Image (spheres, rainbow, N blue to C red):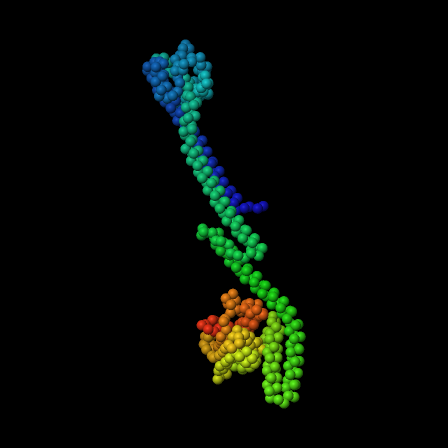
Length: 461
C-alpha cells in the first residue's frame, strides 16, 4: 500500500492533536468537577450559616442570602408554612425525608423546574440550638448559574486546546503541502531524466536536505548526459569500424598494388625528372596507405606490439611523407631535430600514425603559403615517476586556429572544424599518446597554434 510523505507527516501530527484534544477534554472535565464542588461548597457554607443562625429566617433574611449567593431559598416549618424568595409558592418540593440533617453532607440535589427555570434542589433539616428547630430549609441553585460557572471553568482549556490544535493542524498541512510539492518536483525531474532530458533543475532557495537531493539529481543528470554522449560516440566508432574495416581493406589492397606498379615503373625509368615525379607519387601513395591503415586500426581491442623505437626517426619519416604536399602548396615545413637519440618504447606503427596525424593536421590548418614547424627536445615532465624524462614534440602552424565551437572539444571523436573533415585524426592521436603513457594538448598563441606531445623516454638499466 502506498504511504505518501504527506500522510507520513500528517498522521503523527493528527495523533498528537488527538492527544492535545484528549488532554484539553480531561482538563475541561476536571474544571467542571471543580466548579461543581465549588458550588456545592458555597451551598454548604450558606446552609451552615442559616442553620447556625439564632435569628428567625424571615423573607428579608432569605432575600439577603439570595443576593449574596444567587440561589433561591424556601423554609418549610413543621406545620407546613413556607417562607420563600420565589414569587410562586406553589412549588412541589421534594419530600422532607430527602433532606439531610448535617450541612456537611449537603449536596446539590435533583433538578426542580419552577416556571421556565430549572434549579438544583437541596434540603437541610434545621435542628437545635435554633428556637424553630424542626423546620426544613430548601436551597434551589439555578441551573443557569451552574452552566455559566461551568463554562467559565472549562472555557480556558477548550480555547487553548482548540487554538493549539488548529494552529498545529494548519502548520502540519502547510509543511506537508510544501514538502509534497518539492518532492513532486523531484519526482517530475527524475521522470524527465528517465525520458532523456538531462537539463539541470532549478535549486530551491531553502538550504536543506531536499536542496542537497536536488543537487545530487542534477549531478546524476550531468553524469548521465556524459554517459549518453560517450555511448553514442562509442556506438558511432563501433559502426564506423565495422563499415570502414572492409572498405579500407579493399582500398588499401588497391593502393598497395598501385604503389608496387609505380615502383616497378620507376626502376625502368631512365629520366631523372621522371624518377623524381615517381618518387613523389610513391610518397603520396604511402601516405594514403598510412591513412587507410588508421581506419583499419580504429576500434581494435588487441594489444599493440611494444618495442624500442626512435622518436627522431619517426618524425623524419612523417615529415618526409608530408613534404611533397607542402611543396605543392608552398608551405614552409621546418623540422628541427635533436642531435642525440630520443628512444621510447611503443608501437612503431601507432606512434608513426600519431606524428603523421598531428603534423598533417597542422599542414592542412596552415594552408597555402603557410608555415609549419616541428621541434623535438627532452625535458623533465614527470609523467610517471619523480625524475623521469620525456620527449617533447611541438608542432606549430600559422593557421587561424580552430573555430570557437570546437576549440574545447578538439580531441573528441567526430569533432572537426573542416567542412570535409571526419574528426578522427586528433582523437586517434590522443588515444595513441595516452596508450603510451603520454599526453597531448594544444594552445593558441598570438599568431600560431601549437600542439604539444609528451612521451616518456625508455628507462635505461
